[in-house]
Length: 567
View 1: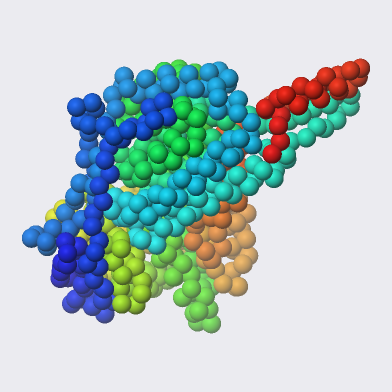
View 2: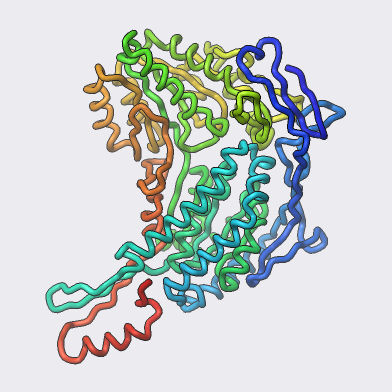
């Protein structure tokens, strides 16, 4: 591999062993690194801050280059305030004041007015679209198409939630019902103060999938800005400030260990919306003085498997096999495999394990490896991009080293190689085969560009892997027409193990109108444009006995009640 530079931008041109697999890179001579100044939001007002007021931490972009060294070298692209325990507790105090036992401005606002406010926020947020897309590329290495999709999908998700609120009888369309002599009106209301913690891989989309429903239902929100992928949230503050009443949303930035435990221990948090690792979730929940009162919504790890059934290898099913192999690569390596829904292990029949591994390796070798905005002469963007930091590279190396020391081989040329120098985080994906139960990669979630291929003699092997595993998010079953009975058996057994069973398709969350769930250590709660509204609200019933003047009295009350106003 040779490295070339133009206007300070690293260009990766593959040669030698890679020349046949990759297209030529088209130069980008105009890309300049962004810089986001540190800022905070207090009492609804946004202002930039200095290190004299609050400690700062530099945020390093994973995609910068150094012309002199001809390497990928991390570069400062912003700064995040590092809040202290005292400052975090002040935010908790401000959130409690805004909630005011449910009597605050936002929870008392009519649903119609909250919807309008959130719509105004989305209008303001769209003004930051290009800047946020650029940050997602520089900070977490998401390619241009995926970064654009994340922003646009976030807006679409929020609008779909609003549409549900407007049209669904459970929310904006609540009406009276009669049960015997009782007349009842049911509408969902806020829980209280919701602490939202989103992940680095989808810092906007995953966070807003909980934040927007929580706001619409009248909750006060404290958003913990992730240490990685957090700069985009700084660019959203002005939109929130312009659209929502002061105190409706609060931001906490800094190390999680310094800010989150005291926040939970304060008892101010009524609901936890957490997307991340299960051990961190357990720690947060245990820190609450009244965990039985804490409404918990979790989206956690997964070890989703892709199962290739025997019938795929019948020569007459060659086209089907070719299609599902492409799907397996896409499912394993979209955004470098950094998705909870990624395929984390492939199971193939023992007689076909090497065939599958080689076929996957050939496809991986054709993936363009480069910077997020790089375009290739075939019109595609880089499919494999830098990981967000060196810690992720170190973990990938440890998994590969462990597997190869126990008999696995890297099946694709250059697999596991780091391109761009010693500080680079651009890693060529590694297809590992054969992967066995004694290897870490067999059971640990890699969350990165490694494709482990294991084998099975009997279908019971994959059934046991699913039943006995720690996680229960999704599974993909790849088959042709001859093994539909086996596929049906897998489906029936996995229906009480996984939240989603995909047939001849990769694992994924979309479409957002479908429930996104999981079992065991993969999830607690259900995400979709409708289900998320249920997760962050509680049904409140207004009832009276239908006799005497009660109907007239309640009718007058309803006219004056903001809670009972429809949309």
